[in-house]
Image (cartoon, rainbow, N blue to C red; front, side, top):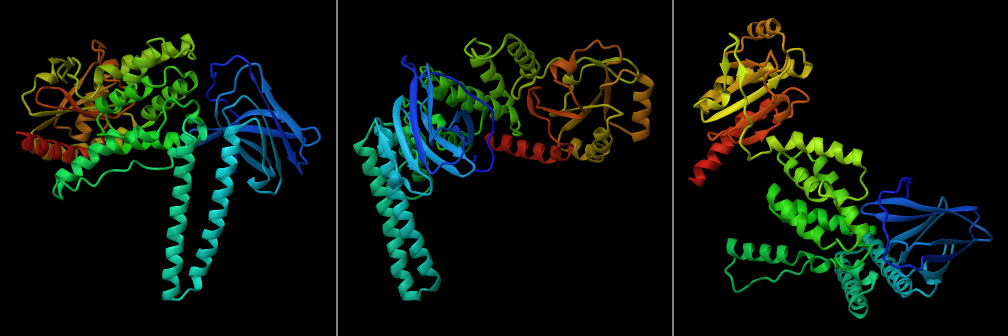
Length: 462
C-alpha cells in the first residue's frame, strides 16, 4: 500500500449489526482535499472509500456496519493506521506527530492501539540507539549493549503479554496474540531423539490455533492472519491433498457465522491451490469447488461462473492422482484396437503429444533418448498422438524413430481429451501396476528419477 493502492474490493460482508457506522476524523496539518480510507486484507491492502476533506476533517459513514479490521488513512503525505471494531467513534491526529498526539473518543480499541503504538515506538528508539552504539563499541562494551538489547526484547514481550491478558476479547488483543508462536514444552521426560521431536511436533500442530481467535470478527483484515494460516497449511501439516482438504474444512467450519471471513478464506484458499505448481494439489481444488462453491454456499458467485467451475471440475476429477486411470482404447499404426491399460509392465508412461507442437518437438527426442532406461526400470512408454491425420502421425514416428508403443484416435472414438484433461501438449501421466495415476504433468526429464524414487519407496513399504 505504501507504494501502490490496488483499487479493487475483494470482499464484502457485514458485522451483523443494524445501526450502520460513522467514524469522524480530523487530521491536523492536512492540505489534501481528498483522502483514501483503506484496509488490510491478508497481506494486501485495498481502498474502502474516498472521502472529501473539509477544514482537515472527514467522515466515514454508511447505513450498514463496517467490517472490523486494521484500517488506514492514506494520502501521498500521510499514512495513519487505526482499528475498526466499534462502529461510532472519533479520531484526531497531527501530521508528522507520533501516536502520542493521537486523540480518541468512544473507542476502547483505538485507545489500546495508541497505548501499544506509543510503547513500541519508545522501545524501537532505544533499540536503534543501542544498535548505533554497537558499531563503535569495544568487545566489553558490546556485551553490555547486547544485554540491554535482550532486555528491551523481553520488555516488549512482557508489555505485549500484559496488554493481551488485561484486554481479552478485544480486537487488539486478538491481533497481538498472532505476533507470537506456540510455546512448545521441551518434553524432557522423553529421551532426546526422534520420539521427543515427534511429541514436540504433535503438540505444536495440536495447539497451533491457540494463538488465533477464530471467533474474533475481522482478523482476516490484518496482515498477520493470512501468514499464520498459510504457514500452517504449507509447513506444519503433511503435504497430502486429503490432509490439506481435511484441515481446510476444520478451519472454514469455524468461520460460517462470519460471512466476510468465510468468503475471504474460501476465495483465498481456492486461488492458492488453483495456482500452485505442486503436483496433485488439483485434488484440493476439486474438493473446495464441490464443498463450498458447487454446494451453493458461495452466494457471491454468478450462475455463469458456477457453471464454468462445474465444467472445470469435470475435467479435473477423472484424472486426479490416486484414482484409476480412465479407460483408454485407441488405435495403433495398423489401425488395430489397443488398450494400453492392459499392458503387463510395472509402470505405464502416457505421453500425449502433437507432432506440430513446438514444445513437443523439444521434449519428444528427450523422452526417446531415455526410453530404454525407463524400460530397464519397468516402465513402458505409450505415446498418444492427439491429431487425426494418420499419415502425418506415421511420418512423425518414422522421422523420429519412436520405438515405443504409438497410439492415436484418428476417428475420434475416444474421449481421452476430456478424461485426461488434454488441453495442451505435451502431457505426461505415470500409472502404477494397478493402473492408478501416481504422477502427472511431469517434465519428461523428471520421469526416470520419479520412477526410481517411487520404486525405492515401495520397496521400503514392502
